[in-house]
Length: 512
Ligand code: MAN
Image (cartoon, rainbow, N blue to C red):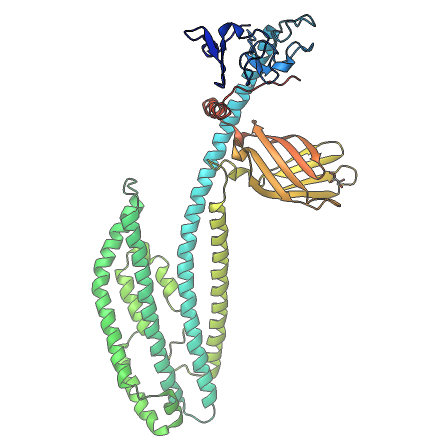
């Protein structure tokens, strides 16, 4: 018996040798003397004297292997010992098959290497496609988030408009038949001014949100990319900030003016206006004083928007002002007929509903995107593009199908009835997490558990189900192939070394 791991069996200076578990020292000559001295059986690697020890087959021309010592000289030629060294007694003699076995093994290994390389290329494509998809999702998320801000702001404005229109209509209805059109006009003008003031404040807030988004972008963008679009947006932003600071002062001033007019008119209580004919004339005067201030403009908002339009860089302006521009506002102070107000009310209600629907749709889309982006698709997101890719395998009585990260089914080949075997629940491999997929919560077995699937996946060029078994009632085991689990030889060897180290021994071949 040749001791390949020779270093372990060197005698010490005094001619003794210590059992590998350190339990005792024995004479070096007692190694392989067909008598078991060490409790771990390490002194008899070449005989079957120790029941718990391992026998080492050199297997020249193939790969060395360990078998359990009790399989030595048991009258059976051990497959793992192709050199026949496991049967060296009188019971039987085993031929040395290592040359043929080695050749077959090497051929298999070479075709395995080729298919692994092809699988690895397919996996690279999966990873590349997944990265592109992630980039698209991230871009879409940013767009959606921006769109949600604008749509929400539009919704807020429409809601305020609706509120104003509703109170205006309610006011008009209560006055119907006993008040002059001038009183309505007065009330409606003061409400409009209040609405417009509110609009200006909101628009200023929106501009501040935009300013902070762009400010963040200016601060946080990747300076190494030298993206011309980003650079031009930043210089536009810088220009805008300078101009906006001065125009903001004018807007604030105008607001202040309107506020002071309001203060002067504080006495004009809507109810007073409605109920006291004498105050009607007094109430109209300040409103008329306001007119010159907004003379020639449709409204104060229009005026402010025009100012903003002149200072916003075109990159920011595109579509933004349109979105913020009040739509369908009843701006004509003279247009005080009931039917017009009702039509405006209905229209605004419709616009509010539409904007609410739009916000909901956008929010749902954003939630879906966020879920996709936070889902575990493997170390390199290699499973992303395989989600819901389905494969079938006819196994005689049943045709089994499995959709990656989706559902698995068993379909009867007799009557086509389909039984749900489970929905993807988790990755569960021990050495490689993503090689085992668990599908659970399938249709409950009669008097038993819910059906479930454990799919074990090995590297292959194509996605394939090799076979399906049912080791326990209603627990199905799929053996599958997919490029998603392929690893480069270097990575696979690295993992094998880690495994060997954690086991502390080379793999043992049991006698078949
Ligand atoms: C069906 C199939 C089988 C399963 C039995 C359990 O016949 O789903 O796979 O073992 O039900 O009753």
